Length: 530
Image (cartoon, rainbow, N blue to C red; front, side):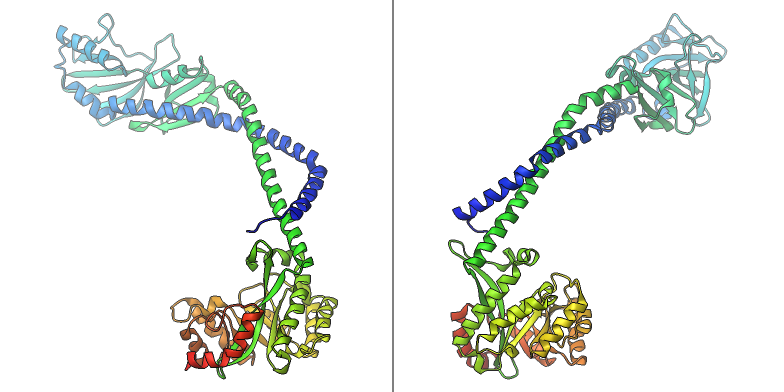
């Protein structure tokens, strides 16, 4: 924005050292507090971390399962085509080969009608016992069963298929559950596969006691199955304990970052405040003048006084860099008085007092709520030849009035002195048109945001027409700001808004430029509008 000189740097360093010394202990406490606060989130992040790992591994295993098994009907129908259901030696060899080549199949059993059963385990035969439970049918000739050995609580899925020649039974390995159970720790994960609608019928691998807890992750499998994973609380606690130190450091880092960010903002604020105060002392704030023209007569109606900061070594500083801040800090008040002093001096040189032209000066609500402040500003005119009756104050709406009753009294007093009060940027700020009635205003300025839509189909154009209609009906003086083209100027003139301000008539100028402009205004605009 601009360079800070050595004097300003010393001011800032003193202020910041004093500020830092007062709250240094508090900041350290805040950092530690945030760090410990983050450690309370360790169980949450532990669950997230474990579930994320399980999710990745589960998704990979499920895709493998789908690739090898997929839809049961398609899988077993294709499988059944390999057999004539004779249980010959050749078919027994084929059963063993298929089971061996597909690691998701534990055993295949073949039962020709009226004959003994043969299977991929040549030394065993498949029998139905009381531990086999049918849980679902897939069409007329296929069903899904849960089967378990008499001496085991763990169960596995079996797919039963019946054809014209016999029955085929495929026992599926619980490979997905088994891998997940052993991947992270010894017997600390329970994985189960169940029917979505019948959660009581399931196969599992791991500690069945964990089934009473909420699953840490679940995913849908083909054929209406659901895979769920449960984990022992001790593992979550252990993972959470491992995460506490990293979370503490992360929390401290976040707190330190926030403190540095706030310190940076404070440094900027203290820096800007000190620079502005020094600028006031060194009278670096100067007025720029933007003409307001009566386009009916091509005469100069007056000018608006705009603040500029001319700092040595930094050039001319844009008002957007300091106006919002000084309005909040209250430094706008001495800046306004400084501008008035210089305006009186500049305009007296060009004999402004011999005309009826207006000087329009911006004020914030805070100034219009304090009669003493206003009187101190008016006293500056008492020492000059320029009459206060040539002064108009514009109410800027960037800040809201805190006490409209007091403001109304101050405005009434100013009017009694012959001073006009204008509503600046009508329709864009806090009070809007309610200020016109509550403060009994008779003059308004139409903001650039409405004027720039002339010649377009933007809805703001209709708002512009409404503002103009309102101003006419209320008998108010209207000044259009931001006029930049002849088209805009003529549009406004056709609607009897003949007091206009903007780049079309002239940019804000310093005293010397405005003096030259003042001499040439009538001739120049006679040519432009002619």
